[in-house]
Image 1 (tube, rainbow, N blue to C red):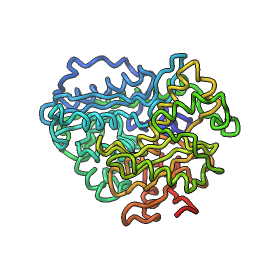
Image 2: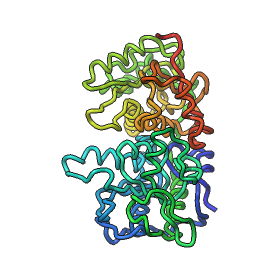
Image 3: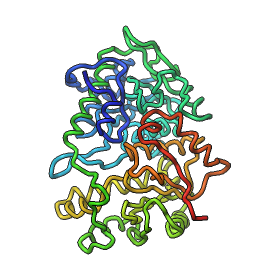
Image 4: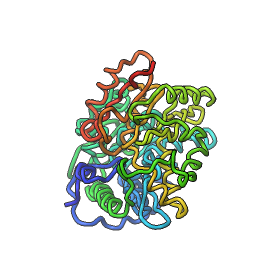
Length: 435
């Protein structure tokens, strides 16, 4: 029997929204044929198989076999498809994290926001995103931010927003819970489950086949096995790292991060989990010089170096949050360094997984907004597992938004799907000693 999403994550397949099976999958998946028409769909089954074909594209490229399609609900016209692209293949072989936020649903929403005006795309409530697996917190929040309808094939009992299959979305605070109830639907399966959720999704009156449901599950679990086998070692313990800030041989590492954040490696704190006033001032200054920005996030490596920081780009779109841009910048710069023969060795010696470091928000995410929950979910997708060490927290902030209290922010975490509450144990903490 194929492993469940819970088992896959427990075994160490990192950060990629996925599933625990809602139907039993056995053996290897059958080849996924290309749909006869990728420009339009005419039924729930053809829509689900289009998403499945897209998921297979992600698996074939070396990432997770999860995918989605954005369609006009009334006509079935396909606007865009997007596979998971968290991992990319290295030129020397193997795969490596390129963007922990590159889940299919998040990418579809970023594409929609970027193209909506130029392509005169329909309003969000006239569209459906169909995904092979119940969206993770990051993707669910991205979908709620934009306001599209969401059709789901396979249930995910570990990181999916409907992980308990109740359709109540009790993991979300209001008003997000009500918004999800009004826009998420779970397709009926022939000879299996009944339809659940919103009838606003495309082809909500039709069922999908159990074979398609099973294929969505097996495509993911098989690809997760392949990623685990192919991924290059990337998590050196801090004790084995050399400090790029004091190592002349690491100048190319420093220069790579300074391309977009000139202050990279110019601030060093004694303890990476104890950010000081200099980090606060750097984030304030970054917001000040970034037009339209209201927040900024820094990443401090386990040696105490402020490696990178980003301000939000709300003028681009609502999903260009400071955290999303920061975690993406660290991952993509690190990927480029590892992907070059000239910098591979020094990158391995100097950089490690983000769950050894600390992300510091100028202002904590607002948990009652979809953008705030998007950041919490993106943090989970970045970490993939518990931070090391766990205390003090790897998720810190200087200020709280509006009338939100520290207790309210923490209380939002407890009901989240098990990946976030039990495995990663997300625990936002206010920076101590800085006011």
